[in-house]
Structure formats: structure tokens, C-alpha cells
Image (tube, rainbow, N blue to C red; front, side, top):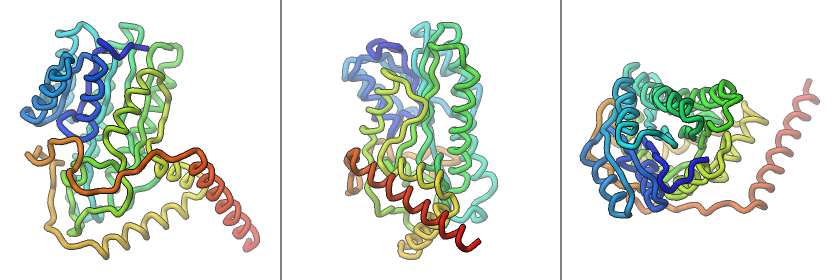
Length: 326
């Protein structure tokens, strides 16, 4: 494993949210940072904050949906440092609302940024890992990569795709023990991301749920470099979503759809917006959203165990009921 001090670390989506929090976390550990995002000024602000913590950091403005720009990002890392030890594919966006209410172009852009951007980042990183004989590739997935996300269908498609892509890469790299492919699946995180997403629902996006902090996700990313794992959930909701959809996919789809429809009926009206999907916007340059949101603490093993037992019993009851009806 690369030691984090001096590890050359590429982080995309570093101008805000999880990317910014992760850049600062790696800076505190003494990593050498190559930071990417579409907004040059906000990206340079993150690099400046990292340098103030004593780390080396350069900003390379990059649109990850553009393969040539992603290759230029990798070349910048090699030109400055001669190697790449960690590559964190972190960019993510979405369109919220009924799928048919957004243009096909806007939905396609979500997949280009989330899935194709991850694939292009991986294509840029892996040749250097293979040449070096080691490296850690970390792909940002989501709780939505394990279970459906109604009213964010293209987002769900991209996250399911990232999970499958990451799992496939791991098998292709069998026999390369120094190279690791990891996927991170956080629950809802307090970042500017919701405000920057496209919203064609006409309703305000204010989930009434506990949020993870972006710093909590950043700590998981640091831990993956120290001890790589194939898939890691962040937040007990992500674990429950994984178990629930694995045991009772139909019920999970029905419940999640009903919950979001109910929330939409209660939400206030707002203008429809394309957010930052098609092009960058100035708003949202901090790690957190700045809103007064409740933050979740890490669940105890007892909480997870009780949740798992409840899901198992529920699945068994449903199975028995369906058998009796049959």
C-alpha cells in the first residue's frame, strides 16, 4: 500500500463537497495532491487551503466527461511527480424529478459525468498503476448503487454502472496484488450537491433525514488507502439499503417510491432548474451545504445487528406469506 505521506493523490470533484473534504484530509496527512474540477477559481481555493496545511497541491481544471482533459490531468500528475499512487474518481451529479420531465440530453450528461467520467479516470490511472506495480483506485458510488433511487433514474443508472464497472475491474486485475479497486457507498451527505443538481420536479429538495458529514466520508477514503477493501458502506442507511434490496427487491422499490412521492407532495414549490449538470455554476464551493441539517453519528454494531435481524425476519415472513398464498 502507498503510505499517505508523500503519496501522489489525484482527486476529482475537489472544488466542493466530499472532494474538497477529502483533499483537506489528505493534505493533513502530507499527501502530494493533484486536484481536479470544472471551476478553476473554486478549485484553486481548495489547493490553496491544502498548501496552507503544509501539503503540495496543484489545481488542474478538468471536465471528467472529456477524455482528453482527463488524460491531461494524469499527465500533469506524472510531469510534476513522476507517478500516481491514489486516484479518487469522486465527481457526481444528478437530475431529480420524473425521468420524462428532463431532456434526454440532460439525462445523458448525468451518465457522462458520473459513469463515463469514472471510466475515463480509471483509464487514465491504470496504465501508471500497472507500470509501477501498484496503486489504489477509489470510485465514488452511492447508496443508490445498491438500491433504486426513484425520481433520479439516470443517477441510479450511473451508480449501478459504477458498481458493476468496479467489480469487473477487480477481476480483470487478478494477479496484480499491488493494484486495488475500491468503491465507496455513502448514505445522504451534507454537501452543496443537492442544490447543484438539476431539479425538474418543481419541488424543493430538502430530505428530512440524518446526513453524514463530508469529513466522515473523507476518513473512509483515507482508510481505504491504508487498507483497501472492495466495497464499503458509509452510514447505517447504506447498509440497510444493501441488505433490504438484496432480500426483498420488490418491497424495497415500493417503499422507496412511496416515501419519495409522499415527500414530493409535502415539499414547497420551486422553479425548475438544470443546476450544474450541463455547465458549472458559481454557487456551492464549501465542503458542507451550510444549511442547518441533522448529522448522523456512526451506528453501533448493535444497531446494525438489530436492523439486519429485522430485515431477515421481514423477508422470511414475506416469503412464507407468498408460499401460503401459492
